[in-house]
Length: 184
Image (cartoon, rainbow, N blue to C red; front, side, top):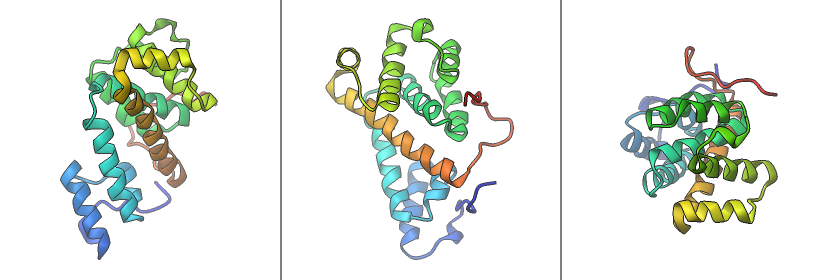
């Protein structure tokens, strides 16, 4: 159970929070997970939803690449909730199970395709060292172009924000969800 009661129903909010609630419902058809916690700060929830929609659906990254970026961030933060949701989404989007396993266990990138390795290396460098090497940045530029290289980093940053929200509120995935291996 999370530290706050998830806000998932319209009758749980009043005033300005109704506008945020309705905007999220319009985008997602329901409120769950991180947004159910962010509804305690309705403007954050509304803006977060708009940013998520822009990053996930407004760019030109494939669903496969988007989901690999998201689970790379989830692994960095040891965020079980994001992992549970997005590791399954990555597989559904065509990610190879071997790639998901390498990310889950923080294994060497040797078993990844060149395209997968660019995403995971970019995320690991950015989140572990707080910078991206010129070589890795150039590889991302060659693979994604300028706009989507920016989207790649922003997507990982966004899911870092989501992970922090979920970890602080101690929100856990549903029983039976994919499990993120404990490494630390």
